[in-house]
Image 1 (cartoon, rainbow, N blue to C red):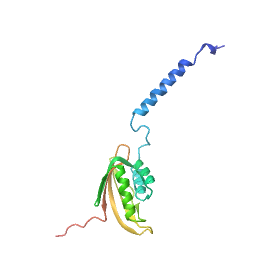
Image 2: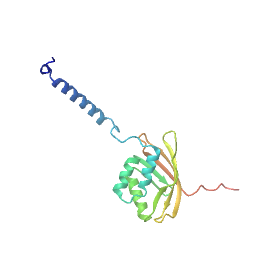
Image 3: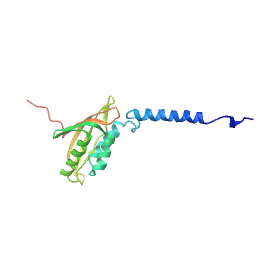
Image 4: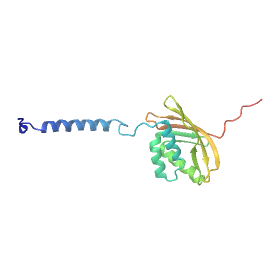
Length: 162
């Protein structure tokens, strides 16, 4: 019969504790290791689009924390802002000026090379009437968050016929 009283569990406990500490140090010292999985282009655009219709600043910030890179750049014909905080404020200003309006994504996300994308959208009033439409071109960072959006309003201009 095996005499278990001869064996100490202390050395094994110390080894397991040491291993757990090593894993914890690795996790805490590796940027992004504990962050959510990489977003797909579709997920990033869905979260970003939802932020444009979110009147509550806290909820809007939460959406953009998931979808927007810390130092992301947003530009359209009327504005250019850099950083998540600036985009949260810019969207808040848009929502204040366009009481009841919302942005609706109106196409699938067309993407290539893992980091480039485009999609179309509409600005609608509270009853769903279209106030404007446009197309955005974007770029994703290594986590799948948007780091650049370049927005264009309305249809393409016609070719010059001279």
